[in-house]
Amino acid sequence: ELKLKIFGKEKLCSEIAMDDLSHDAQETLRSGRIQVLPRRDVAGRAVICDMVALHASVFRSIDSMMQAGYYICSAMIEDEETQKSGCICVHYVRQWEIELSKQQRDLVWQMSQLSHAFPIKMGAFHFVGDSESFLMKQFVNLFQLAVPKGVRHRFVCHFGSATESHYSLMGYGVPVALLPVNENGTVKTNNHAKWVQYRRKKETVMYVDGQTSVGPVGEGDQSDDVKMEVGQQNVGHPEDQHGPENCATTVVAEQENKSRVLNSDANKSAESTSASEFPSPLIDLPSRYDVLLGRGRGCQDHPGNRYLKELVAEWFDRYEAAMKVRKTQVAEHIVEQIHAKGGCFLKRNKDNFWVKTDFVDARNKVAHAFRKKREIDLQKKNVTSEGGSNATSSNNSSSNNNGGTKLSYQLRKKWKAG
Image (cartoon, rainbow, N blue to C red; front, side, top):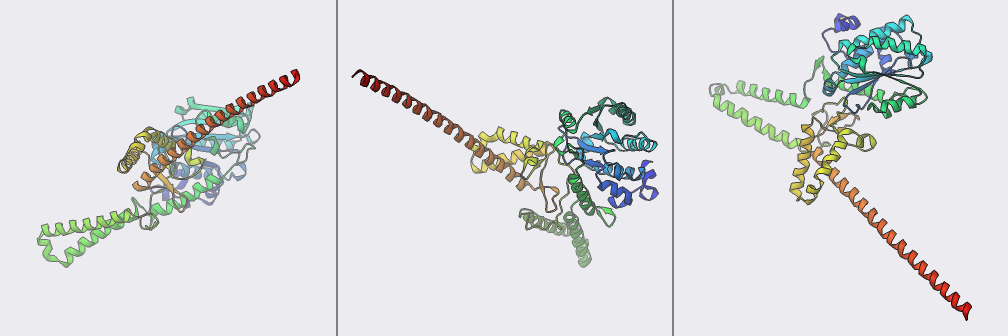
């Protein structure tokens, strides 16, 4: 009913893409009025930031806000991890922009219907305000009535400056470093612009000629080629239709040859394989068990990368004592452990989007983690040994200085006596 009310009968039985939004709704979407953080909280839930008052200048109509919110919610439920773990909402409000007018009340009530229309588990609702005035409390009461009943006992208010609110949100596991609000109250849209670009790229991959592509294009081409070869064989050789054993043997042999070719191509490097032939599915949000391939604190501080460090520390002694073949087996075992947790190894493609890596790249990542730990342990050992040698040398020098002082004192004493 809500989809029918927002988009009409034409889009009732189809997926909502960005081009289906109105011009005002697309402007509202690009303005960052509602944003999805590029990282989950410590519980693995997606984080939605809603800035109802911080973007009052770009407010156009309730219909445009509803279309933009509906599109973001429909994009979130495409992610499997979000379907399992749910999401949380962080709502920013400033005191001087609260009016409690009829339009503002209608907007709050209309936007609350999105939480009822989508099967997304709302884990918590954080209300962030810059003051605790009477008007702000009235606005809080309005929000508490608008949110679903199952979330009202997890409705948390954070009043104060942006720094104080961020420290308070940090205690609830929210990645405050990625929140789109600065200390002075201005809104950051860099990550949101990347998310909009990502959605554009994903929709071009998913929707081809009005149909949703289920798997990689390479796999579809493979099945079509096999069917075409079987059809040509049945038409060109009618005598094979009377010999099903020979026909089946021929088809199996051709499929085996094709699988050998595909396996040999899969073992090649990613640079030699065209992205148009074997496109990788794009990842919305890395899960907490995904391992990110890349540099920087953003990758190192990811929960999946920290989990990989724990596994490397657990298997480090056995890895160092093993031979080369056994080391490869240990690395493959760790990769399988991460896959068993539901995690994957992700890397950035040429368009700067997260895609899954193959098994060889994942194993190389684990081997690199072992080498990195070996280097860190060696550096710590060298620092400890240098500290011990410096302490010994300083003790020796101090003892020599004390001895020289005693000797000079004795010489002066004898000189005075003589």
